[in-house]
Length: 337
Image (tube, rainbow, N blue to C red):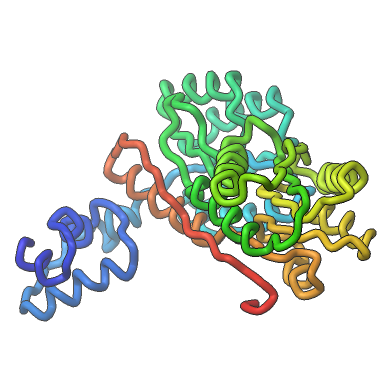
């Protein structure tokens, strides 16, 4: 294993993970390890599985998900990706369960957590970092239910892991983009779904921090809430346009972008740049016509694949360690569609 690690340029622990399937690794890393082993002339006797299946392939578990309202297209795509990637993990005749709630319906989220805990072993959750939600997660974790935060993390509450962006990096990237787009004086608006949504809070703070460092005279407005809805995005954007005649740019790391786009299109004479997170329904058309200037796009399918793979592996190994999987994002403009 030491020889293979040296030849592949990786650690011995990584070689162990690849050869003994202890933990998932990136496909490119796995390939490097296997190629190094072949070059060195090593051949590995396969571990004999029971009934012709690998240990992880035998793992069957039931999963449930609590996501935000399907009125935002992002969660349509997320639902489809999660269903496709986690269905094979389920026993025959069962399928992943889904609940959808408005972002501020804390009581409904807590009720759904307890309902799912009676039916599944694993829960994926998109929700606010609210004390009642954390209390429920802690209670379910003590019962043996593994709860994973998706896209927005929680303060420590016994949850099993986090799958999402490095939101500080995403926010500072948006700040860098804004500093290169803003060539004239003007204020900058920020939209968030809710102030307890930690992913967006971190994005906003990091965006504001970058502009404070690089353009200290630029006025960054206090954030307005969209409540992760199209209607909320529309009304928040209208408020920005009506109250700030010098509005030059909006940063929206939130849901409800379709509403933001609609409000901007209603005033084509106002040239306001938009940096948003996605994907968004008809987002490519909005990039092409200039309604969106730059999109920071989540890789939803990749998140669903990594979640399914990690959960399966941890369940097979009875691994109780906290899993933090940082996902990549793409920077999309009309020119690289």
